[in-house]
Length: 210
Image 1 (tube, one colour):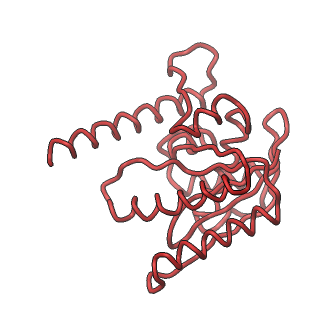
Image 2 (cartoon, rainbow, N blue to C red):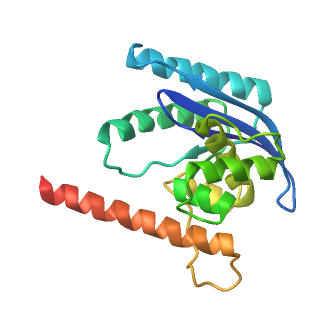
């Protein structure tokens, strides 16, 4: 299975492609970062990113696209622009008739490092090790895109129940005390639940402030 991971960002949008086989075997294919400047009109910036996503799809023919799922953050301007790029990526998947999966940052960090709160540097180092690269992918957006693709490969693949439910807002979470979970899976479940709870609290606080 070939997976295109997309780390949405308006200034830098990372796109990483891997091939995945059984027994958690993954192999590096390609990575790129679409860049746009603040001086460019917003709609033109989105067009630059959309064109690069379409180019990567046409070049590599992925079987599924994995995109980072957004959560509410303190920086409202940042989350809005990132969500716009995520929407462009989701539209590209639909136009290419490809399955779409959404994975949260904490899920990705836990999948590749075992720690749902890992720093970006740790993600870069683990992506390098997992894909047997000569150096950590740079910038961090490139490593994050590859990490998204790895996460999707290890969370069950293109047509799993996880991927299907992710299309509607997120994968069903196992309980962190559930039997049979690996350490990384347990860390993911704990981090993901914490992130979702924080999002619910932030939304409730915003409603009360209105």
